[in-house]
Length: 238
Image 1 (cartoon, rainbow, N blue to C red):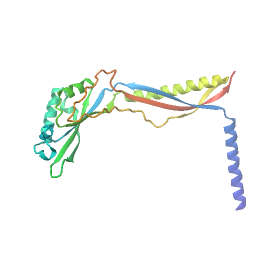
Image 2 (spheres, rainbow, N blue to C red):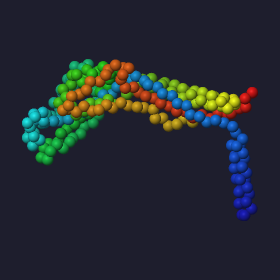
Image 3 (tube, one colour):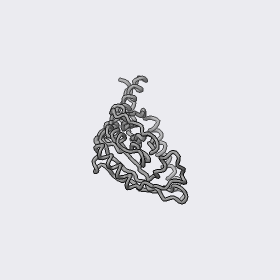
Image 4 (cartoon, helix red, strand yellow):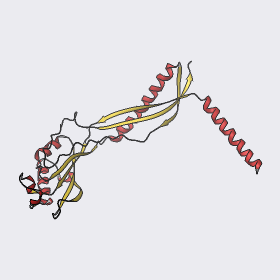
């Protein structure tokens, strides 16, 4: 048994010694390259949340204890759908995301809320919606997810450009030491964290809704950022 343990120990030590010797003798450089791309979205999800309210809320002299006339969510939704139709939004581009309720005051009814996801093709539609919708009963408006149909291709190109940047960096660093860049030994692709979605300040029902800049050049974009790590051989200069 002791002989077996000794043999195993010697065998493992030999492997570690060989590995360490190989690491010491190998000459390489490991660098990270990055790329950034901004894409104009061709699909914008505009989120609108409506909520029941009391008519007395908009009367300056009314107090919460005097609130009695509740505007039902069905009426608010009907007005919203009419405004969206007027703004040129097709019913097929409107989806209900969630329904909830809120406790208003002790002894008062629940106030029902609903959130709608409106699919748009360009930022101009946002301004048309804002100019058309009655803000009473609108709890919030904000931009949700931004998409682009060619996103997969942009991802691919972003990674390629990051890898090219890594090679360029390794090339000039090795050249600065009077050496030559050899073959690639390893490529590491980090976890993707490439999206940046825009969510502006919500517009409440009792305040003015700001206008959005509909110029595509000024509109928030989908930002893709990639990093690629690569290891290259270092060869003697000829």
